[in-house]
Amino acid sequence: MTVWNEMSDSAMDLLFAALDYAVENAEISEYGFTPFSFRDNGDGTRGLTRFVADGDLAESVRAGRKALEVAPEGTVAVTLAWDGYLTHEGERTEAVFVEAHEIGMPKSVLLGQRYVRVDGKLQTLGNPILQAETDPLVRVLRGETE
Image 1 (spheres, rainbow, N blue to C red):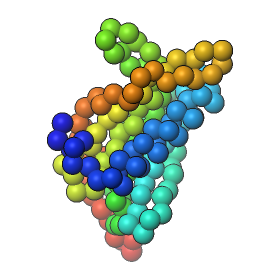
Image 2 (tube, rainbow, N blue to C red):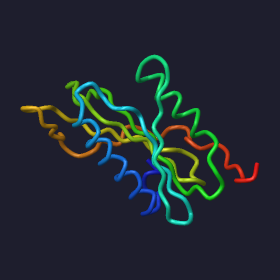
Image 3 (tube, rainbow, N blue to C red):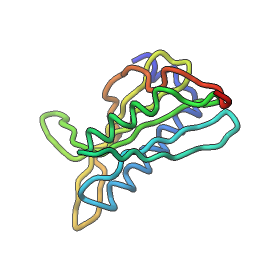
Image 4 (cartoon, rainbow, N blue to C red):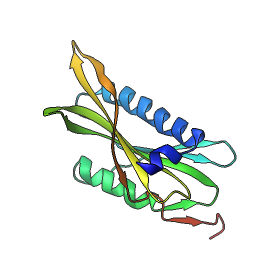
């Protein structure tokens, strides 16, 4: 996959920070967590936004995608993370997903990290799995004064 190989180190750092945070959130509740986004800005700051929509988890993920279509000027990269299920090699497990988009790249990447719960603790299974290249999360940058 070409976008994966071309992402900058800083965009990869954001992706894996979101993945780590998603795993932490998944451990807190066996019922899933509220989808969230990290956004890195050109000035070195990072923001966190959670997405809550009426309905279910899928509706909150859709709300996150919609909100991320337009990002403030100066945004360098964004992620969208949620909890769900992943089937890998015929085995279905719980998993966290992180979609990451570096501004200027033609696509986003989607990673899944499988996990199981053992005695109330979350244990990750293997390494994160690159799921796909997806349409870019951010489609438009807008000026702060608009």
